[in-house]
Image (cartoon, rainbow, N blue to C red; front, side, top):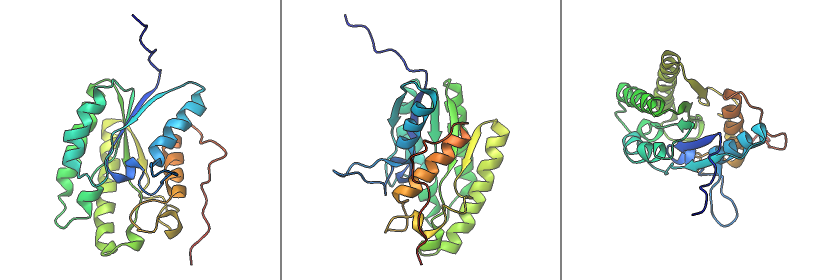
Length: 213
């Protein structure tokens, strides 16, 4: 019987919606890349070791399916690090139940930690400059981000706040649909995540975009 593949020291799994899947950062052939793929690359570069990586995120998912469909599948891989972002699609709908989102997020983060992995909580970038009813959505996003920060502090986990990054809010960091990040936006999120994890991003990444009038 062949020996099993050695387990990498870092086993990173990402769960979420289109933000984490990588929509907006399409490669030739149609495959998306996105910030989570770049984080995996950046961790390998920073440590000099291969890592194991899987991305379970699916575009369009609300928070309940993210937790119900992706969380246990991710934990079955016995990861050492799980990035969690959800609630963005819930936020775009009328009648968003922010306390429920926060409570479900807390439950998921505790489950990740109980499984022996480090949870990494992310706030998504702020798209509201270019979408209908952006002002109303921003109010909910601000509320959710503040609550996420309080939750992360209470649980003692790392929190990457992309919502409050003023550069990411600029139009040039978003794709033509104005709802998903452009490649440079995904690269900037990846750099934010790596910094949150105590790692530098590769120097050849393009993190700056020319302003759009």
